[in-house]
Length: 417
Picture 1 (tube, helix red, strand yellow):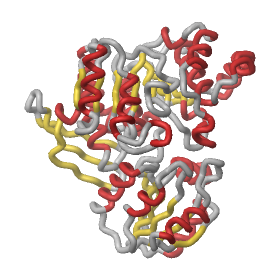
Picture 2: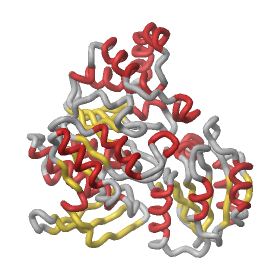
Picture 3: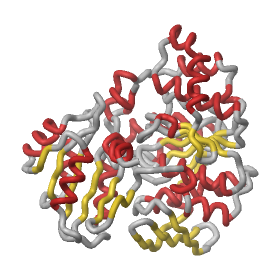
Picture 4: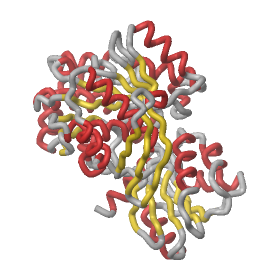
C-alpha cells in the first residue's frame, strides 16, 4: 500500500476503481459528495467541513488518508470510525474481485468508503484525495463542489517537477459545471485552474480573494482569527481548536466553500459554521495538527512533512517564546531531505528517528544527510525514545517539536493511547 511502501503501490489509472464501483453497484452515485485535493491543508479543510455539516444536523461521511493509528480513522460517519465488523464484511464481499483484478490497498479502501456511506445513507460525504487528483482513485465522483487548497512541491516524482505540472494533476478533480474553490491564489497555478474552469463551465472562487485575514491570536490549544469579508465588507471572528497559524488559510477556504454550498441549497447557518470550525478536532477526531502533548517544557507534534508545511511550522515557532528548540525529526524516503533540513534553525538540538514502515528513511541515513550540511544530532530508533530523551534534556522553558512524517506522529499516538 502506498502509505507503507510508496510509489511502487500506486496505480496510474482509474480502471480498478471503476471495476470496484461496478462490482458494488455504483455506491458513489448514490451519495452526495464534496471532493478535496491540494498539497497541504486538505485534511484540515475536510475535517472542518465535516464538523460544520455535523453541527448543521446532516449525517456526514468523511473519507481521509492516511491514518495515524487505526485504519478505521479513514472512514467515519459523524466522527465515529467504521466498525471492525463492517470492514470484515466488506472485505469478504469484495475478495473475489480483489483476487481477479489485484487492486491497490487505496483502491479497495475507496470502494469500502463509498459502499459504507451509501449503505448508511449519509446526507453528504467529504472525500479527500489520496495523491494528485486526475488519476486519484477518489476521482470517480460527481461532487457538489470541488476544493483545491494549494499547490506545493510534494510527490514530485509522481505528480511533476513544477507547480504548473502538479496543479494540472490536481485540476483533474474539476468537473463539468461543478463549482470549484481554490484556497490560495498562486501566480504559477492561477491560469491553469481558470483554464480548466472555463473548459468545464465551472464557477471558480479563489478563497483569498473572498476573505482576508487581518489579525490572529494563538494560544497553545486555540487560534482566534479576525477576517474581512471582501464581498459584504463584514468583519468576522472565528476560533479553531486546531491552533496552527496555517489554519488561517484553511478557514478562509472552508468559509468560501460553505458560502457556495449555501447557494446550492445546503442549510449551513452562521452559528453552525462558527461552531464547526471551533470544534473540528473534537467533533471529527482529527489528530496531528499542532497537538500540544505537554507543557514545561512545551511538547508539540505536527504532521508537516514537505517544504510548504515545514515553512508554516517555522512561521508559527516565531510566535512562541522559548529558550531552546529541540527538533525530533523523521522523514519518508521520497522527500527532498536536503531542502527540508536546510530550512531548519542550525542552533536547535536535533534528534533523528524513523517510523517503523518500509517507506521510512532510516535514522542513520537521515543523520548522514544532516551531517553533510553541518547539522549534528543524536540517533533514536523510535520516536518515543527520542521524546523521552528530549524531555530529560530540555529545560522547562524549552520547546520540543516532533515533525517530518505522518507516520512518526502516528507512532507517538499509538504508544500513548
